[in-house]
Length: 150
Picture 1 (cartoon, rainbow, N blue to C red):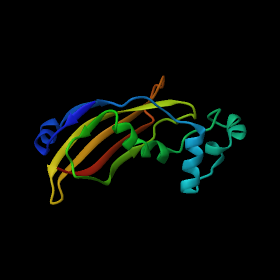
Picture 2: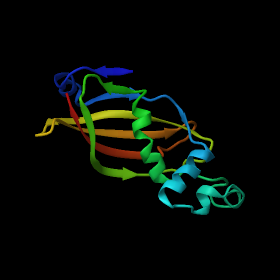
Picture 3: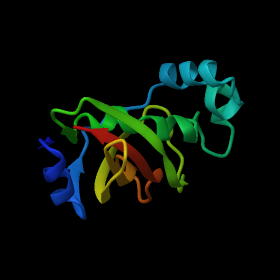
Picture 4: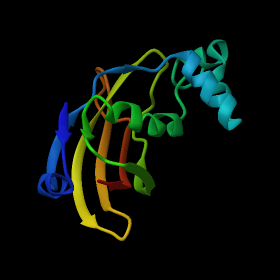
């Protein structure tokens, strides 16, 4: 776990890899809850019997569920201590090169690409690469943008 204690430390860390999260299991229950929250009940996500005969051999997580795991994965990799607020500003690039079969474990690597001052605080661009335990390709690669206020 890396702790960044000030805006100056954040700027100094730009261009570095901040580390990896702990492994996180993607369960059918989590997939079903995400399906309920988003209204995306496609059978490849929520019907294990039908999905067993489908292209992936099992149910898979929604791509956007995988993307939405970034905050929980970040918690075990790095944190900015002493911030008064953190706000998601957006994403620049998002790709899902491989599926996440239900029951798999994923983890994320975090690279601090850029930090620049903005009128609201420090604007942070991270490259997040989510990988699956035993997988050959990443399951999600995203550039996230957030604003941290110290």
